[in-house]
Image (tube, rainbow, N blue to C red; front, side, top):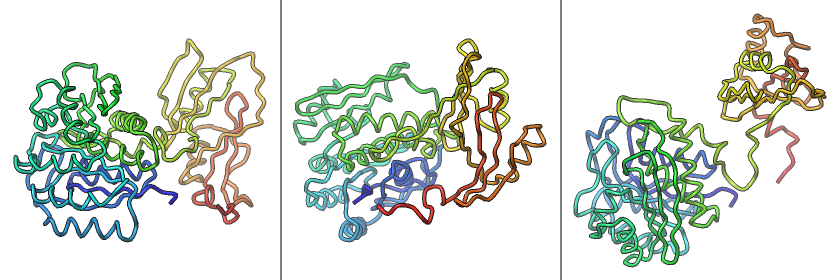
Length: 390
């Protein structure tokens, strides 16, 4: 298969911030195919949970069997479980998936503080840990799962009892410095980072666990999968859209170029040499790019384009500009964009033209003579009729 198939067993979040919705976004943005077995339907938003309706266990199993029998499964992510009985029967069913990585996020409480698992369900989590490859509790969840007071000792106790790795998530620690630790039977790996100043933290645990499952499905080691998943979550926190009046959702849609799918290199940054810093900054801002770095003392600026790719300029008045490379910026409505820029006084070498290679292009130059194309290609950029067969 050329795409990782991820089975997600979790509850639905009507607000789209956590649960199945966050899981699908994560797997999709990382290039996988998300399949679901919904365990509960919740009514919730960024402020809290107002209703929970568990799905019958036999329906959960039917969903698992339906996708596994036809599509196949490369990794499994488990999130919210609706009841203790569901936890038991899911564990029994997943025991048949030999060799398939299983990531268990032991969801007990929503970000808003609403309980999502009763005592009996939490007691049944042991069965799910028995079949899991890795368990990803936050600090309060880790405390509930073990009688040990120290976090590392608690994780080691779970590793010993259930033969699974445990990722200790430090997001509930106080202070700006955070640490996560992956505890395995024969190894401990830790990551350090700074707390990201945002209230949009709804679904971080779901997102992290799904990203780990995705990377495990692609064949990465457990340490590599956790490291890349952490990066995905951190960028999604930075890119959060700020929705709702409480704990908002992450910015999943803005991460793909930062932590992308598969093993191919990602084209997400171009640096151009220019003559004059100030004129070039004005030019690229006028084109509609968002400036995210302004360093005139170093004659360097960076701009973000639609989709998240970045373009930088480095000014050197003594450099000879050889316009042998062209920068292409795709516009949804190239004619309207060219008209807008022309009204602002931006000169074009030629306006929008239909080309034999099925693109529509307009050509101009920046103040230093670098060649810029505004264009519209749509599906013909990656999928032209003459695309080479794989």
